Image (cartoon, rainbow, N blue to C red; front, side, top):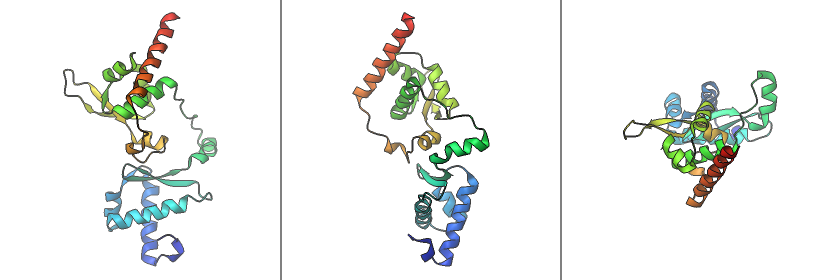
Length: 197
């Protein structure tokens, strides 16, 4: 199914249906839901989606299909951002400061994690960072820890995968304790700088 011209009419129609679903939904859709909607098995639907993904890689298209943890979403290519904001008047993308990136990294590698556990690693209060990451929809609440007070546990969101071009958390680079210690040292230096001011 590498070339659309070589597909039979039934497969072309299936491709059109899958494309319409992804276009209309505007969010990640699980392969099982798509397969159920079009009345085909998941392997066939996955092949159709891969065919569409290959098709949209061509620079003559402004959209792409991305995979997010076993689900698929049609979205605009990042290279189209500047053109799109001119017509939608959407504010510029948010800025991820070093502090936000540090907090996000800790959450990504240690999830599910509570705010207290984040603060233990960082060595400083993380209310602002966690709230900003929630506001940017890069993290979300994933449950409550079974300890006194039942604190919220946080994990990364689909938006995190989308923004960092990851199909799943398995695509994250390997983390090590040295990296986490470096985060903690940077946070302590940042806290000391604030105290000196």
